[in-house]
Image (cartoon, rainbow, N blue to C red; front, side):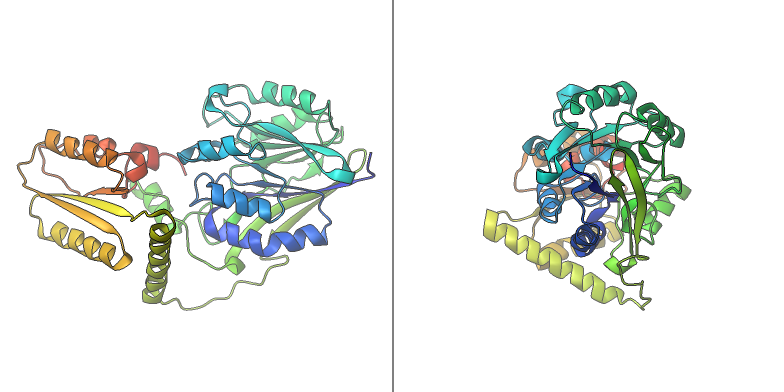
Length: 399
């Protein structure tokens, strides 16, 4: 058995700001702290919800041994494919088995032996899934057959439930690390029977934000109770926050250190006057390059479909501007201009056709609709994967 194992855990990565920060800091942290096992929570890595295959690959290439997740991993339809493609990408063990994916794994660290990693999710204020305590106890027993080094990512909302898990697993595992709230707590400690514990390790993402999301969008949702799609701030890695935990294990954990940036190993935030027009131009340039790459590599031309009912001048101007933007970016676009007398049944029929049309990747129904049409039924008829506005209940629900 090795004399010690250094374990580096990185809190929830949120979107490209978090990914970029990890790319900048992680290799240096691994080297500086001689990390033997690197575990990263990646449930929000792709646009703030779920994890795409390309981003999982990037995280592994940076040095991660295991990627843990949580409830938001299910927000992306392709996450299920990702979970099934690599056993090192974990989903909470206590979700029903039919969901597929892997809840725990024992990885080989070479001369440092083996280490187990478990992902489990709480139930208080969250989905009413299987008992996380019994699931964790069972998995710890299985992993103990191969190793004494066991890390538990407990993805939960309630502080009390997380603390309860720490006490429940004290002496049974090496560490219980809380995730999900994106807010680091100050209670990192070694419990009496030797298990390292912290209620929440925090996040790796935009610092000037609401849990990693754009402040304006979050405030609009909280103050007006209106559906608002998830938005991530655009900012440099120097103005992002990375909350991580590092510990050293002998017969039991002997050190527990918090690493955070921009206070550690990261340049300080620099204040600057931003040029909104330039930022917009930069974004358009990136989107145009992505569209060209899709066409070149996969023969896919991004397609947007617009439905405009009636002759509202403001709506007509808006839709025309979006069609013009599509042309500038290399997108295919189609606009259905319908009379104000169009029935709800006709609109639903058109949506079903576009949902099945592989040339159309995004659908936007211009609101408001005439009073005889139920807007909510129309919104819910759009395939959530093609919902440009993000108003479908599956896209609005949760952060």
